[in-house]
Image (cartoon, rainbow, N blue to C red):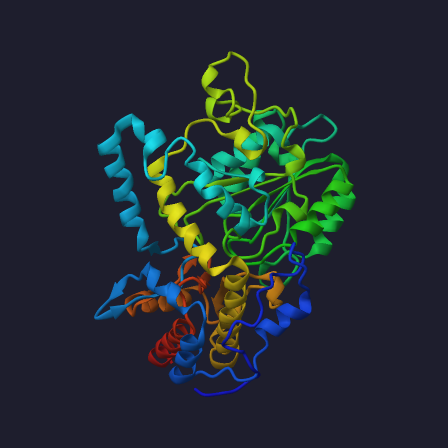
Length: 461
């Protein structure tokens, strides 16, 4: 293995973000970041890129699972991010403050508990491209989507449909269908599911535009992913929102696979709401506290919502008044006080994001995934088919691949990879997802994946 094809500069020369973001970059810059003049499938080349990478020290901030005498090649941050080394001490500090201070920790802990959700607000806002007033860390992903739909899915007899994609993550389909039934309508009629119309299961903007043009007058809510979980396709949130709003539809996004992965620019997209989990690219641990976004134009709107004490205006919350006075912005959708022990890992992870800079991480991610694409196409093309869109601006870190020899061969490869310390994940019916996360993955990780696939192929040829 030693082919050449174009040049990937190992240093960070661009701090820009993806097209359509608030940072003003265009498709040309994305192409420059992923152009390859000297990609090579050899360990020395990969090691040289990693040694020259300005963000290389961040890998040492994470606990890489062991395998044999070495480390696992962990390429599944799209499912569960690795543990930052600082998390253990952060949790111990909170436990110590609880033991030392008791209830006084709400005001006098090292990170006081009363305003603790503010400890993560600015970091989340930076990652998802929002104003601080637009974001809050709370609950779990599907719970947040349900709470937001109380406010933003307001069906009428004439306009009560929800538009989702056919391959939506089951939880998204479940919540959409159950919301429709809760309001007295039938999902068989009111749940509009868009079929994929591109290679690999991707969904074109033309298909979305066509659906909105033809059925927009009966659609109350467009609910799509920021990045599709199965195919890895990244969507143009601003373009979708513009089309939907033109038809009078509310727009929300499930950003589970997008937060910490791509440059979301949620504020500039104009979407009404969004939610995400924090245990994938945000590295906050299994079942971590999720996040929610409500656009600033709704910050003071008298929207219907499920109400709770922690959503009350902070200035009057402890006056215990009978009437609900919502806090401005996304914080007004909170129900209960923040779970401190669950927020501490998120705080630690966000500090690493802030050290790196989301734009720099996106730049590294584009180069890593471009290298993985090159390896698959030039070294593994007779074995693997890439399902994720080929345009860099239409994908994040994740590549979804299918083994050309069929599902049984795919499962065999997946089991071989796990046994040899290379971890991706398997999604039915026959998709393997591989995601080099830029905070801790390397060019060497991508190469080891390719070499493991080749070793499996030699064994089964």
